[in-house]
Image 1 (tube, rainbow, N blue to C red):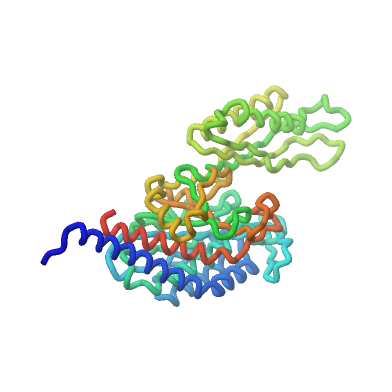
Image 2 (tube, helix red, strand yellow):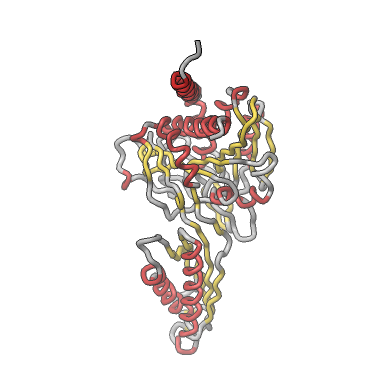
Length: 437
């Protein structure tokens, strides 16, 4: 006797739901079993940080781990990058997962036993080196994901490309690297990537939570250099020269009107910041020139174009009004596009995140004026960049040590959720592709 069609459909749906639940339960068990190992990797990376394009020790540890799992490894991508390819036992799409590897020129001030004591020379200065943005966490989590997924290789409907990327934080002028260079060197090809997922840990976001945003998640960034050229004179006789310091002060103040008076700020936020100004070396000498470095953050191509034009106009015309000359270079050394999460892919994968962390622990976040070169991958293939909580339970987000500072601190208890999230995103995406969804 044939079963009614409705009964068959219900049985299939129930079986599918059971399979997905079983898969997530298996991932959870495997992820929890390697929690101490993931934390150990993170602490080792934290104690031995390396700047962009110099992640030699770091990349070798990663490559050896991937090889130990039977993953095909390519070294030296975009200088120090590592790319691993895990080919599943069944046909299907290629999913890329990315972690960044570089530390920052910051001298650590935390009291953790694995605090960095590393130093190096950066831009001609002796500096400390610290993982002050969580890249050590990202690497350790992705190494854990690789271990979990490699153990499930025969059941994978497709392949996984593990991208360990150098130089996310940018490089000195003249150097090439980061996501842009990895894309140029074909990291999304051979085999061609169908979707990419990445995460970033956040010191101010409660541990145990995942934050997401469809569309523009993090801002586009352009760095800039402004050189103001005047005419040197004795400080006692300023009328005999052209003062680039006074001119620079006027330029800085005038630039603050770009966002407040030229943008529709209720639609899209933006930032224009001068972060460094250098000129002169003595109290009674007006120097010949002043150099400034700054950053521009925007969420649309239109706003980016407008701000760049206004910054150049304000700087050159303000200098001209003072009989000085302003030379403006935008970008100076780095440009990242908007980190844009594919809305359709977010809608498709949101249930996976909710099933992994719990509905109440998956939150829609505001756009952030920080920038991420994950955006270069998302320009080429659909992607999602999620944010993982690293603030200790009960902590005050307003008092959390900021990223890129000597006191940056992360609660390691949230790493397992990161492993589960990336594993489940990969498995569910493959599963849906296998079912034609």
